[in-house]
Length: 159
Length: 159
DNA sequence: CCAATACTTGAACATTTCAGTCGACTATAC
DNA sequence: GTATAGTCGACTGAAATGTTCAAGTATTGG
Image (cartoon, rainbow over all chains, first blue to last red; front, side, top):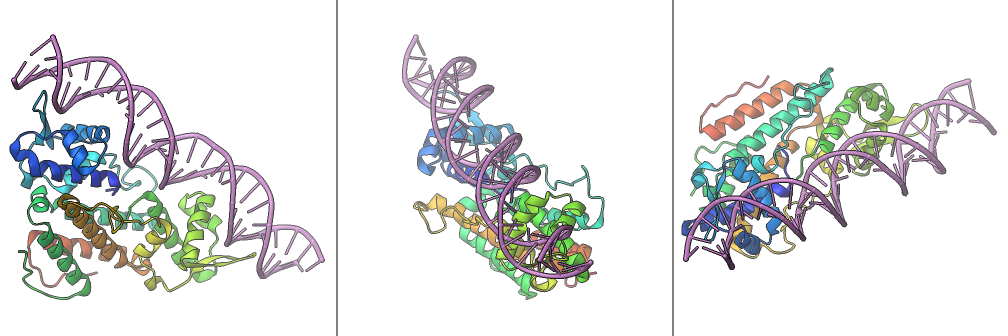
């Protein structure tokens, strides 16, 4: 998984959408204005989001975009994967080289990192971001720190 | 922190270096040949690694590069940070906007993700990669999975 | 000393991605 | 039927990737 500003834009836009879709479809023009993202760039991003069934479009006056599923069913990983799609992953992932030992060591490291990043991003839904972002973020951080330091704290409050 | 193939190349090269430095300085030409990375590209990468005091150079015949510190003191995060340096991080990290609530929500999410990625990469040293990569990788994965699933497994065998 | 070795630096380059722009088109509500 | 708003495709400039060429400088072995 690659992390670029493109994914950031997409997530920002999706949060805006999630927050406003209760009063009908949300226009890209509105998101563009509020989030200061170019309208045409949003069109590209939402084209991909739509083709990945993350959002649905409503054409005509009063139209716009709405979520294709509930906020809880859309993870950050979904959004990034839809937008950043060239996910050909570890450049030795079955395709070529990876012949000698060294390459496979780095290969393992990278696939593992990718996996963990993906798991983290998949564990955060749009709902989490819209509702109580602080609690979630802090809880995740504490939990991670514990693991690294070998500490043991059996119940972490998550608000 | 950004993840690109550039960092991958750097880590691959560093592993090669770490494995061979016991018999004196390692030449970039050798790394280039073994790892199939263009020599000039390696020169650029090692220039950065040298300026970050991760490797040291030995000039003249019989020269090459060697690690500036022990393998245990060099983390993957160090290598990536040295090579991928434009780490301006979250594009609202103190600089501008971040005015309304939505932006800060995504801001929190990203800074947190960056933090966790960094912690993970910082926890993996060159030594880990050269010695027993499998054990380390597997252990990290299991631990992560447990946290996500809420499972509880008190002693995870490592190696 | 001297020549081969090997790092050092800088520039140029093709390719790709990023981010944004433009223009033409289609569907639909009023 | 017209204004609204999504859809599509091509096209742009800037940056990053990955590579190559060329001209250095330091140092060691002979």
